[in-house]
Image (cartoon, rainbow, N blue to C red; front, side):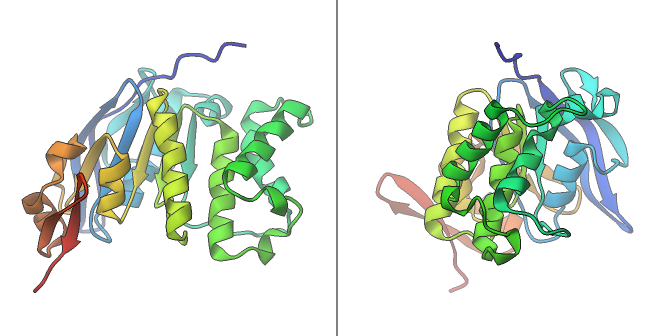
Amino acid sequence: MTRPIAPSFCSQKLTISVPGRTLVQGLDLDISDGGFLAVLGQNGAGKSLTLHTLAGIREADSGKVLMGERPLADWPRQQLAQRLALLPQYTEDIFPASAMETVMIGRHPHIGRFHLESAADIEVARHSLQLMDLDDMADRDVTTLSGGERRRLAIAEVLTQSPDIYLLDEPTNHLDPQHQLDVLQIFRDKASSGTTVIASLHDVNLAARFADRCLLLHGDGRWEMGRTDDILTENRLTELYSTPMEAVQWRDHQLFVANRA
């Protein structure tokens, strides 16, 4: 079956605040052809709240989020879950479950009510475990996994969901350098094939390496967005992180280093 064309995704004049403070003012975001957008900013700048608002699980102060030119609230929940997936920053395991049972949760939006998982659903889940280097842990209880293994399982779950739009809240949390690169390369490849990936990251150098565009959140309502090569500069990053950021040349790339010396 041919998959439907990925829907456009945008926000219009989106304002996000917490008591006594506006974090994001009037965010205009338009992603109509896929790509990888990295969201950068200090702790508390509103990265997670922005992703939650874009996912439709938190109401904005004003403005709206549209997918396929329809407000998120107008999408039936199952159809929305087929198209859009959110990877939260933290995952809690309330009930005992195996890694395979956990990753299969990602297929639920694609399975009809009162239907069981098909062989194809199980194959998608197994492939996601394999991508996350967890294929030999399918029968493990999730409570026995390390923090990094559990994080990779959460990523495998959203991969199993097979959406058109991935909203990833700090996907590299708890991951060692090898798995950080592996995970971001997987989403880079998906973005290159037309899928939309929006990920909050703490490491500006990972953003520089994998993202097409970057959204800088200053935490006081101000935001900037542009092509990665254009917007990641010493001056902008110094202001963003309130600490001197120096660009150094490494091979054929620039690396950004915090430098208080």
